[in-house]
Length: 195
Ligand SMILES: Cc1cc2nc3c(=O)[nH]c(=O)nc-3n(C[C@H](O)[C@H](O)[C@H](O)COP(=O)(O)OP(=O)(O)OC[C@H]3O[C@@H](n4cnc5c(N)ncnc54)[C@H](O)[C@@H]3O)c2cc1C
Image (tube, rainbow, N blue to C red):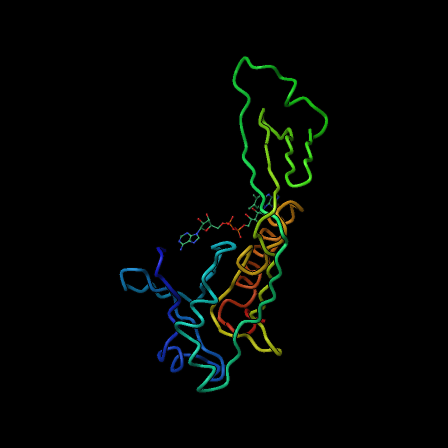
């Protein structure tokens, strides 16, 4: 999917939705205008997910016409920016770094730097400084009803947390398993899948 792409959730979704009060996402529209039909659309596009934008651009009108709910979002700044990069220890270089029992830290107050051994002869260097990252949580079931059928949002696209707390990957895996289980359990019932 490229920039400019979006969900297919238009008037045809009204006709095809098994629940007239809840719009149906029928697939995805690519940047070139072509459409891919799908029984389920999983958005795993990360913290910059454009699902709220899709909602405004393509299915916001449902709100006005039938009172459908918009996704709910809570977002607060965490006041930092956080960068990390993995490196491999070069063949022949000293092993001391990857053998170290714990991280090395430098804290200058306005900037923290951590060097931490990881697995397979690699290590990560991370920097935390003042910045604009946010904690964000979106809900796609509002007042007991899904905002759309056929749409499953997972990982950072639904909830992203302070990266220095190192929870995001676990949450993303848990979401992926939950969606896979729902698709497996009720493949032909988009309402139960959404709930
Ligand atoms: C600096 C930093 C350090 C972190 N450290 C940790 C850590 O130590 N431990 C931890 O658990 N979590 C950490 N996190 C958080 C973790 O990276 C995320 O929570 C996790 O990657 C979320 O997975 P995801 O699959 O939802 O999203 P992502 O990993 O962001 O994957 C989304 C993917 O979708 C792609 N994409 C987006 N839009 C489109 C499009 N239109 N078309 C095609 N592809 C698209 C993106 O290119 C990307 O590859 C860190 C985050 C940051 C920023």
